[in-house]
Length: 398
Ligand SMILES: CC(C)C[C@H](N)C(=O)O
Image: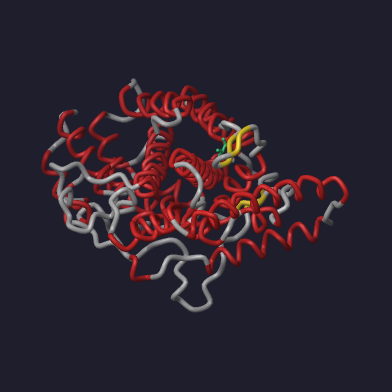
């Protein structure tokens, strides 16, 4: 994240506020929730970090034996943790009601907001960790694996491939890919001026992109095994993003941004209930959405807003969120298949990200640009999950 200091500052402020400042939840709870959220995505890096923080904050060591050892109140969060991580569109006001009205184990509304922001923060941070290939620290379990799950650590196969591209024949191809992408951006910008698609056509393009996104998935053999220090915090480990293996599984239903958007609805609700955090999140979303260096691989002075918007909206599309004024044909034109696979893996099954996927897209772009893509994925995913849970809270309250 240090490659993007403006973003990092905002990220740190938010995280610091959520973990260290006065707030509705006791400190050990905050770290335990971070553990529960990271464990959903098998992110041992973050689980280990927060196990240490939990103990430092005076947390009860017993709870670290697993979810079954934690107080019932925390265990009650399990359902919403699962849904937020994998299928946030399934969250209803009944889930909210169940948490707020269970006698002595009830959550207050303020506590619940704190908890859901923490959950979504750590789900999306897990995506960043796997997307950028951050390895477990050496003194952590799995820190010395002989096949590290990290894009940074090269398995010989993918290292060879990258060298091939850069030194040999592939380098020219990779450069041409950049040129072709720039040309497509230019063409789309020019066409936009002459041609406006009808509302129905725009809706069809969204549905097509959403349906197709279901087919963009890593193969099952990329599954990561869960380490015991992580799996003890996970119940119902099979529950994931829409499961394609089950027949007749539907695509996520569509949430239209005009009915519930961050700017008009989500932000104002969270601002009312937990105002500093509302502000901090809003600032962070704005920073990441507008972040640009006007570069594209070896080119400078480029307006990349179209490309960055396509990345942001593709993630929202995977989670069923549609912007009526956006033409999803752009996503199809601008995001190559290998990038879509990478993005969907990082957002939905982060633990299955591989070196090969990381190296496979945008072969001529800089490392910092790939990290930039990860920031967009991370924040877009967080906002998507928040929109669903905040909508459910609004429905519960009205
Ligand atoms: C994600 C990247 C294509 C972003 C680009 N390098 C920019 O500065 O806008």
